[in-house]
Amino acid sequence: MNEPFVEIDLHGMRADEAERVVEKAVASAGPGTYQIRVIHGFNRGTSLRDMIYDSFRYNSKVKRIMPGDNRGITILVLRELY
Image (cartoon, rainbow, N blue to C red):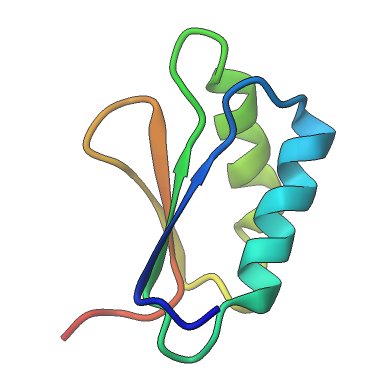
């Protein structure tokens, strides 16, 4: 996967399923991928958001984690845009 911006929708997934999906996306991200936009939802997605922060904040491919344009989205930054 070498798209500059990747989007993953985790709606309806349990935390363990969602973690595997995000881990696969991070592992398969090529050198041209800048960000992975993870849509987890807000009402019931906060546990998924917390899992993303806990599981990927020390991942060597993830430079930083930031909130998206609404509370139901989290962005994993793999490369900075300059």
